[in-house]
Structure formats: C-alpha cells, structure tokens
Length: 143
Image (cartoon, rainbow, N blue to C red; front, side, top):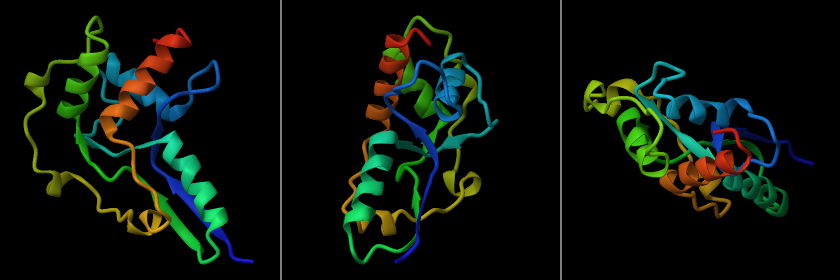
C-alpha cells in the first residue's frame, strides 16, 4: 500500500457548511477591500478540483507520494478585485489604482501542478471558482 498525500493551497468554491472556513474567509476579506496576506498574488484551487484529485488518486494504481493541488494560474490582487467587482459591485472591493502591475516572477513562489495533472485533473478557471464562492456565500448569508 502506497501513501498518498494531497496538499491543497487556498481552497475556494461552493461551501457546504453554514460558517466560514479559513480559505473562503480569504475571499470575504478580499470583498471588503482587504488583503489578508498583504500579498500581491494568489493561487486558488477549486474545492471540486481537490475532491476530484482525491478520487482520481484513489482510483489510479500508479498514484503515490505527494500531490500539490494549487491553482495553475497566478492571480494578482488587481485581477481578483476586477473579477469580484463583477459579481459583487455593491461592495467596497478596494481601489485598484493602488494595485500597480507587478512582475509575478519577483513575488511568487514556483509550484508545479504537473503531478496532479497526471491524474487527469483539469483545473477550474479562477474566475469560475471566485464566482461560485461569492454566490455560495450570498446563498448562506455570509456576504
């Protein structure tokens, strides 16, 4: 029997529970115009992709070791605020005049998602995950 470890990053997407967890709390903070990590870039992964990765790893005989499940796209704070404004225009989501364009090579860590992709995972686009997170938060009256 092989040990398989799944290490997801900031997990967002539809929530089941009636309370906030840490990762979805990050999105709530971003909708308030706050940057919870004082970071200029984020890598989100959709909860549905994390779930599917667990299932695929269980069903794939050759799966073993560590799988980093992190969004394949690096979103800048400016990108995230633009996406969120589309779905929650009535909230104060920060002022992107203060979010200058940045060189992502200087501020981001390098993570390979190729191993998890080898399980057949196609990642949900960040925009879709953020949208579904916001709609889920509204539905649960958490936003």
